[in-house]
Picture 1 (cartoon, rainbow, N blue to C red):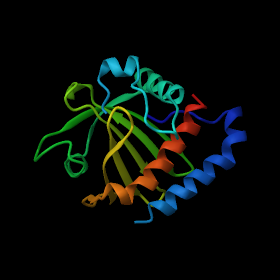
Picture 2 (cartoon, rainbow, N blue to C red; picture 1 turned 90 degrees about the vertical axis):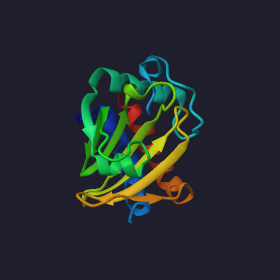
Picture 3 (cartoon, one colour; picture 1 turned 30 degrees about the vertical axis):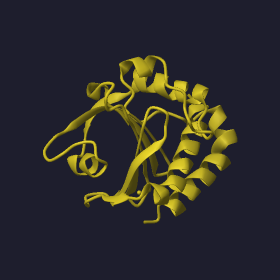
Picture 4 (cartoon, rainbow, N blue to C red; picture 1 turned 45 degrees about the vertical axis):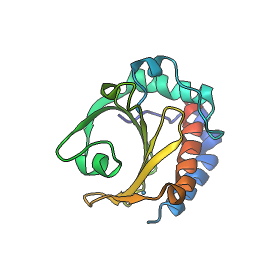
Length: 177
């Protein structure tokens, strides 16, 4: 579901958003679930890039405007969330601006034992990067792919910078919600 972020606040943040998007594009030149209780009351974030208040705004938007969908098996398998033909149904909050796509996905069906959040970033050229985090937004796994191709797992150290940029993008977006 795309969220309309065109408004008066966007005009003042446009340059900042473009800068973050450009950094993400460069970083990606090669690409949670909180259970339902966590959607009500988010876990404290370990991130300094996304405050607890910003995260709460994002979770509120996800709860109110998120849509249900099934993620591509090839992606969820590479990220270590499914095996074989297993599917993963999630709640999605997605934003697109000037061809750059940002998404957050959560699956309340996995329960307390496997909570995760997936952040996804896509470029206008359909290059993607996905990041799996724990409930405290600590990076657990990452993969990159081009639309229609098989994802490639990335070492956490190699993905951390791009993940930090994606958290920064969501911090900006949270202020628009």
